[in-house]
Length: 258
Image (cartoon, rainbow, N blue to C red):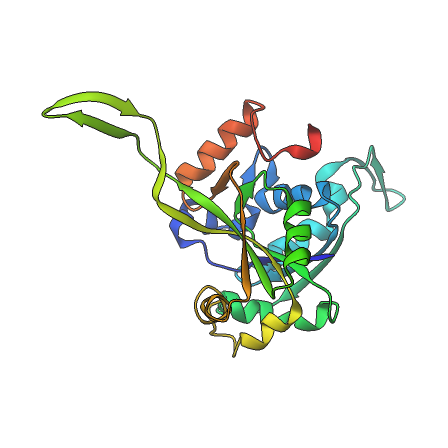
């Protein structure tokens, strides 16, 4: 099965980092966040990736073009014009990098990679800035068993601040970062049938608007509820929190090493 990763946005809410690199290339524990996402999918047997490029997409191209250089020891023999890589860490990945336009919306990016998908075969899709310990294989099987055009992972939105519980005018308790009481949100991990792309009109179509709303209205979207870890990297604070989890060897999404 193929996986489409949307990796072309500007990342304006984390401009401290995204001003010099695309958001999916911001590092967690010395690796770009897109690497973490791909390692998660690989853990569940998905190794064929289509990455939708946009803002500073050449940086992502250069990363994969020089993957061995980033992940191995290397000897440069200048006299003989030779490069030798040592202890290469290979990945079972096939990576297709597609320039989908710097100003293209999320739906338009998916529409632009349609020819790289297998006709009639479902595929995964996610964003290049969110980490989770979601069971990808279980979501894929859930999608296949329900026979609908789309499946979305639904998650509870983590609250950013602790909650104070009052008893009259006295504080009776502190609740540290409770889960959102407003219900579930789009977790950004999809399994889709190719015909969903027919709902995308052009480059300016936002996937989360017309296409998703239409699928829901037509009863063609299944919900896969994920109750585990989920965290988008929207701000510098998010990046620091994810880095702390990785550095302390407590990253819940690091399933491939467990």
